[in-house]
Every structure is written in C-alpha cells, then in structure tokens.
Length: 168
Image (cartoon, rainbow, N blue to C red; front, top):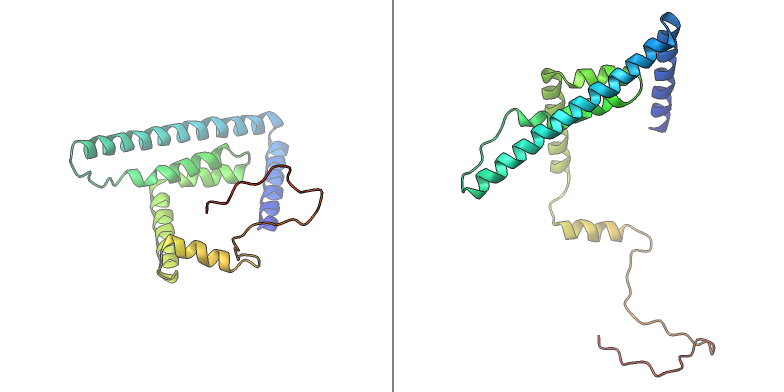
C-alpha cells in the first residue's frame, strides 16, 4: 500500500510538470484552484442534500409515517468522495473525482461496494459484538485479565494511615 501511494504521488507530480511544460505554471495553478473550488461546491451540495434527506426522514418518523426508500439518496457518500478527490491536488485525482460525479459510475461503485460488504458479512461467523471483542482479546498475547490487588513489600511504600477496607 505505501508503495502504491508513493507511485501515485510521483505520477501526479510528473503529470503536473508535463502540463506545466506544455502550457505554463499559471495554467497548472488555475487547474488546481478550480479543482479545489469545484470539489468544495460538490461536497457542500452533497452534504446539504444528505442533511435535508435526514431531516425529512426524522420528520416522517416523528409523524408516525414509515419513511419510503429514496433512490436518489444513495450517492451522497460517493458524491462527497468525488468532491474530496477533486480537492486533492493532482490531475489524476481530479479525473477520478469527475468520474465519481457521474451517476452510472456511482451506481457501479455502489453495487460493487454492496456486494463486497455482503460477501465479507457472509464469511464472518455468527455472533454478538461481545463475542468479537472477546475473540480479539484472546488473540492478543497478553489478553488475559487477572483481577486482584497489588501488594508491595517495600518499606518506603508503607502507608502512614491505615487503609480503608475493600468493599468489592
């Protein structure tokens, strides 16, 4: 993964230098600023739409009406991801961000993510959240917990006043 990120950064920088050599540094600067502005607008509008959908759903639930499923609300997270990719400096991330704004690409990515999550959930064994924590603790080398009291035999650590009795 770190090697992939490093390769992506080198490719982004190389592409920016190629564009700067073909045109000018000012054009590259304008492209980067335009990406930041467009990404900010996209994130803001997707956030507002998500908040509006949440508000409408909460109002419907308070009125006792079962909220209906919205077909247009599934792309808010992917729209925000596209905006974030636009904000990141670089032409490749801008191209990926613009692709994420297209509805067919959003639907394809959404279906792929849904299938992946469903497959991972099927592969996971049944159990509760407590079982998962217990299992994670068991796999740690020092995961055992022993309840007790620390007793020090040092003369310097002897308390001056008598200790209150333990209630537990």
